[in-house]
Image 1: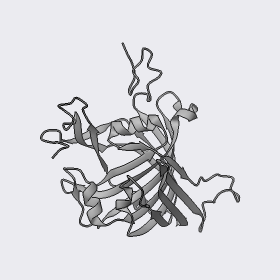
Image 2: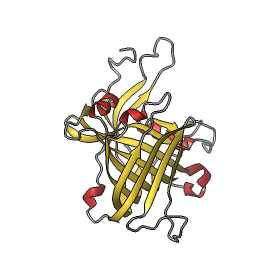
Image 3: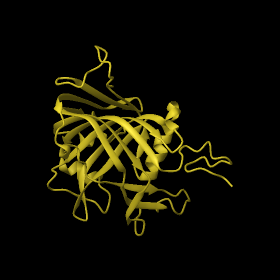
Length: 272
């Protein structure tokens, strides 16, 4: 019997890209609040999600420096289970309830791509970097202090797709400033059969349900984000018309479930 959670399925299951859940995550991250043209946000939403008129194009750009583990100390294999990530979340509504939707996301690790596709995140390969914080600070890095700056960048396909900067002001004392909307994604798997190419095998709205969330060393300040126009890319359609707060923090959580909200396969056609 072949074993594994993701491809490849093998006799021993050791070569699979990811162990079976639960999946444990820890990271340092940057979060930049921004507003796009509302029409650009509406354009990226799949069927079943509606624009949030109160949000007026509001979203978040996020850079993460991740460490991952299953149940067997996978973090001791850092070459395989460390990775960096950039993604956008835009505000939307599902059946009238506020949610976030992820239209674009980039990572630098194949195992992370496989986990993301399993959760409905449309991950692509990219090169993601962000300024790191070290307990022993000096001129090589910023302290967690007023005025310190943390930058992030994304490159994919030889093009610089995103740049960001967070300038710290003060520690976060109000936990409400860190609260995020539930994330709803589009889980999509196409079919290659000639007569089925416009009919995906899976096309569902799914809600991510992480738990045991912890956030530490959270600082808030000012954020800035640039999404340059690039050939064969649409990320810049969501370029900010203005930016708001920026956050730098550390976090951890566990993923072991996914909630299916709505099956959109019936009646859906890529040619419609």
